[in-house]
Length: 469
Image (cartoon, rainbow, N blue to C red; front, side, top):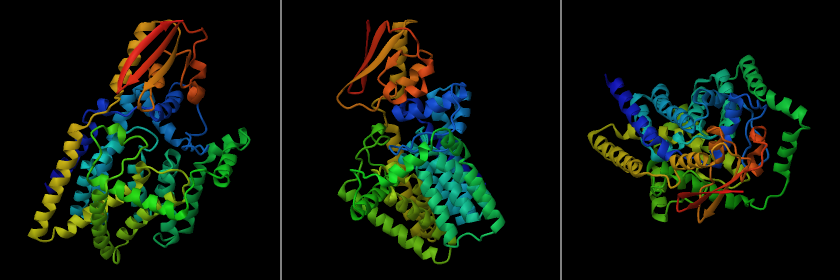
């Protein structure tokens, strides 16, 4: 009976935080349309790639397994952005349940329940879970990688890592964590199993090897350039350490007590969302508390040692990474932090005073995060963008048209171009051709534009102007 109550509580909270006003809070910009075009192209037979997507500004492309997986979603949902959102939000709710089920095997039922409640109710975690792009799978993959390392399931670990590194750069920190756990003796090496796992992981790169052979080793040259070319924004190691540590505390704090304004778009794009000095001091104290409690347990329990190793691997990866960092790069630390917090609650739950203290803290946590969700809005929401595109299509009818955007003030990085493809009306030319034309060139009409369509964005409002050429 207790287990059923635990599961129902976790599921209801996780579903509410990830599906409340899903279309209205769906973040849809240039990144999201890029990671939708590739799966849609596969699903419609437009193009079947041997590589995945670009990794930030590195010129390096991932393996294609993530986009192959999302092509199934694109096929089922016919490329509907909301279906992509439903899929990743569902993954978030499933992850919350897995935190409980898998955590129970590693840390005990009560600690797993607390960790799952914190995961389910975290505003920042729910925003990451409902955000569709190439980092969407990181939370569930982070959990599975940790569990397979703990249970020494090398074959399953290799398959999970293959998908992780194909999706997002954060997958490399998971790979680093697994390698460190292996080297430091957390895994008992069976030569046959280890070799087989390594072969499986390397085979996941076979499509890229074929792509390289056909394109004059484009990937290898980009990789060499990334590590050898000077970068203007490269920081000294001390400055990089300060930046990585500061963002670690900042993101950790917002995982438990979300402090950004109610416009969720500010958290889902690159920007300065740092906690103020007072909030940072509180977070530092709470993190110190977690460290003290968990390190005492880590002397005896391999699971706690692995939790901190996963955090450390993420930090080490970011110290090595040469580009500017942002909060979502810390997605792999969410699972270990929630487990550390859950086990800390379990420790203080040993007497009546501790129970009272725990109830108060959990209550404050849920109140802070759920009230933020109820007040959340998106300043440039997906429904408004879709409505603007639908209105433009009604105006131009079946006539060929060009498309542009004028931004008066601050604007999110658009996200309109994919919606024209999704609705079956391709512009002859558009502002996105410079960046994404290879994703839709063969779909473009051959006629000269009869209309010039322009979206004028000011203060989040979209005005349509359509003039005959």
